[in-house]
Image 1: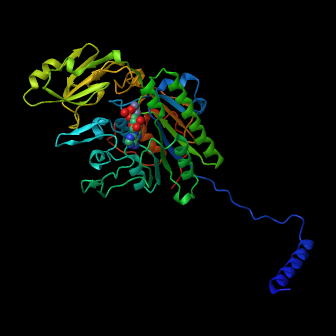
Image 2: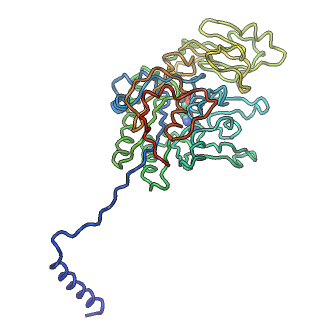
Length: 428
Ligand code: AMP
Ligand code: ZN
Ligand code: ZN
């Protein structure tokens, strides 16, 4: 017998002896289950119009709304994706936070406009997003997409390419990519929640684009848009079940950036049909149009443009009605026309294959109203009165136990009926 076989035999004999004298049930050392501190997840379902919740195809969201706080949320003007996502995470309206549109021209660099791919901090640096405020307070953050979350906030470009000096991003962030499926996005967030406490984010974002895309392609009333609602509802269910399976309490703040209105090639007005050629330069068209003037043509342009027209109205930027809170930011072009709901201003003649839905209209229009649901240990069930999306940022600060700040465009007052007294906040 080799030495290790002898050793094994001796060991086996000793073990059998020990078993014979041991009590029937050996004490198992207790494994202390972790009591997880609540996390906050801000979820954007792009283009989820408030009344989509009544279609009977969103059982998960409807349950969360019934058990938590829910209400109709008014977007800020203009009811576009980037301006409103930045409002939700900064508490300022677009006129003040500087992301005034999905497309912005820099008069000094007309060849380098801001668009939805632009991550040059100079466009974003006016207002600090919630993840930067949280990281400063040692709250770890992670973003599974959110406009601006890939930007080094506070930094500045050093070269012609994307090099940036300085600035802050969420501790974990992802470059936006529409090809990343909803399941992958949810699983990414669940994987973050599954991390050990020391490196687990306490604030996350999650973003879904498919309902907005379906609303544009097919219109808000099309069965394919309704089917997209069911799809995203299933993804929210996956998230809720995944968190429950790991006993992770979470305050979910589920929002949309805007609603959706039906559009049609028949309700399209060509800007060239009412403006003199050569007097203007188009910056944006769609539910609204914005223009710069070709120098020397001011009077000619103003005569044709200003005032009420059939299906739209135009103003000098300083005269845009006060209720829109829009028109003081230097990034807003000097002339602005807003179409009536469902109408479009276009540069080129419409095609029968054009989109059947759009947003960017009057932010008070019911078609632009956005989803809001808050659910989790911080919330007592409540039906909220309609409120503005500038109120979400102060709510997020409350959930993260960040001190109130002055100078915001909104407040957390509307949530006082729903916030639990201790807000389910994890103590630092
Ligand atoms: P809108 O044109 O206002 O309907 O914008 C919606 C679109 O914005 C989505 O379909 C996405 O393609 C795009 N989008 C959303 N989030 C981001 C992001 N973080 N970076 C770049 N594009 C985005
Ligand atoms: Zn959007
Ligand atoms: Zn959209």
